[in-house]
Image (cartoon, rainbow, N blue to C red; front, side, top):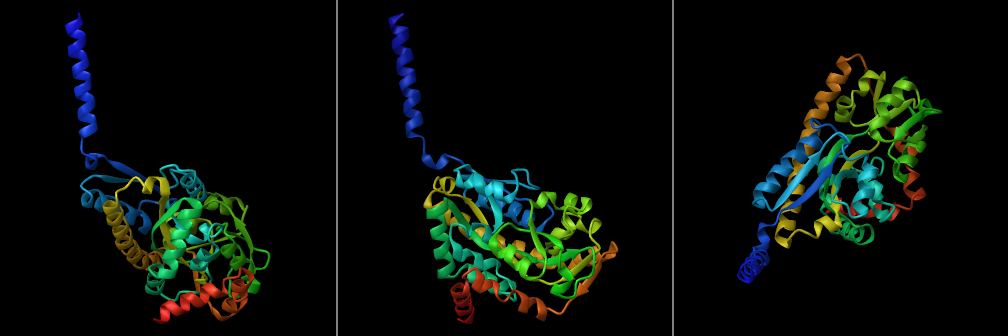
Length: 327
């Protein structure tokens, strides 16, 4: 019996030795990324491509799992999970993160960027990346890339909108961040933050009167079934960030972190290209359902929201944006 115990002990020690000497590079790290958007949305397609390329480029050491259509919750819920250290990431408008780093709200400021290329340039600037480092320290959230463009936000209503006066008393769903709320309020409507997944039913039931969204999301969420007019205000260019929890990010080697960041930027541009391409088609498709599409004079809307910058103390950040774009 003693010989058997000795052999068993030797076998156990050998197994432990193998485990201790196994190459660390063989370990697999999984990043779980959710989105409130459909798989057919440009962001969904970009995330799926990003996941495939990360797995290939890291030799399977980093695996990205993508969860579409609010499977991991609303964007705010996913951010809360990430902050708590859960292995959850998402694509989010950067303004949601401004409660930790106020300067980040500038990415969602009204009528700031004229083109996607301008937003892409600023998202890779030293000033913006510095705010991203600050976010990681303060909130435990790492921004992999902030050039995932979802399109220009337009007003979705039951009545035509030609000026801010037409939005008086209209309960309009918007994102629950100060820059969005104050922009919608300045445009004349009553900002009403609710989760994206509830917008369709809220419009259908009359809980809200209107919403604002980009063309691909109007089509993907079938909002054309519950609104009658889309006025092309383009009040905010929705430039979003791909973020993950810092605790999950820190599990990656420096080499894999660089690979993932580079691919996040590259696929942000891919998804943004799809946004621009599919956004034009989406507006045609929405119009074909009977919804009326209106071009509007932007001057009164720009004038109405001009005070938002000073109200939220973002004048310095706006100057930084202009300086970066001027270089």
